[in-house]
Length: 102
Length: 176
Image (cartoon, rainbow over all chains, first blue to last red; front, side, top):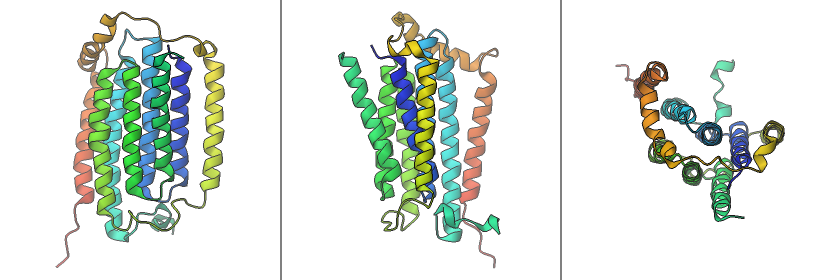
C-alpha cells in the first residue's frame, strides 16, 4: 500500500531537480535534458491522480500521452535548433547566444 | 513496510539520484546515460501505478527515441563531451535557492491539499477496470466527445516538428 503523497513528493522533487538544471546549466543540450525531467515529473502526477482518484475514466493517461507527444516534438525541434546554432556559432553555451540582445 | 513500499522506494531512489547526475555531471554523455536511467525509473513508477501501456510508451518514446536523439546531438557537437570548464552558469546559487523554495512550496501544497493522502493507499479496483483502461483510452482518443481534436492536433504537431526540424538542421547552401 503506497500513499498518494509519496508519488506526489517524488514528482515534486524530480520537478525541482529539473528546474535547477534549467536555471543553472550552461549547455543548451543539458537544459533540454532538464526540461525532459520536468515533463516526466508532470506525467507521474497525472498518472498517480488517474490511478488514485478516477481509474474508471482514462483522463490521466490520455493527457500523459499528449505530454509525451509534445515532449517528443519539442526534443526534435530543440535539438535541430541546437545543431544549427552550433554550426553557425561553434558553441552551444546558452550564455554566449546573445545576438538578439544587441 | 510492505514489499511494495520497498520496491517503490528503490525505484524512487534510482529516479531521483540519476536525475541529480543529469543536472550536475560535468560530462554531458554521462548525464545523458543518467537521464536514461531516470526515465527507466519513471517507467517503473508507471508499472507500480498499474499503467502498463504508459510504461511501454515511456520505454519506446523516451528511452528509445528521445535519449538516442539527445546522445546523437551530444556526439555531433564536438568539445561537449570533455568540457573542463564548470557546467554551471553564474546563477547556479540562485537556481538552487529557487529550486529548494519551489520544492518546499509544492510540499506544503501537497500536505495542505491532500491531508488524508498520507495514510490510504490506492482504492481497490477490480482488475477488469485496469485491464480495460487501454481499450478505453483507444476509444477515447478517437471519439468525438472525448479527445479526437487534441489527437488530430497532436498528429499535426508531430508533422510540423518533423518538417521544421529537418528544415532547421539542413545545411545552408553555399552561395556560388
